[in-house]
Length: 166
Image (cartoon, rainbow, N blue to C red):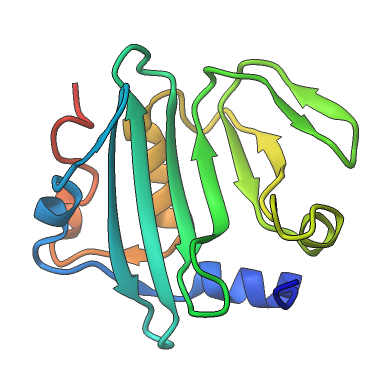
């Protein structure tokens, strides 16, 4: 099993400043061909040297079926989800707590408990319902602040490239 990442280290990585490149919008517009959805990702390095990946996915058929993810992307923890903002297209069940979020936007966060309980398969299995956003644009706005993203032109940072804007 991969080493467990502590709650303090998870919080520090989320708080680490992440500077987006001058071409961040163009990088995010570089779509991957996925069945039924638009998906893109961008790799970046935090100011503390931590390698990260941001992934955005949106279903063609359902604007409330989206996700925005901040991942650790190190050799020991590739694509390790730290923070995930999901739309309200589906129910979510916190398996350890036994509660459900019924078709509401929710934010996942990696925890030590879920890393251990799921043998690293679902480190971000815990989620909390949120009223901070209802759509992908709102989720991006919350995500960019919560994940401490810094943009060359902050006024334009709210705008995602097509097809993520409708």
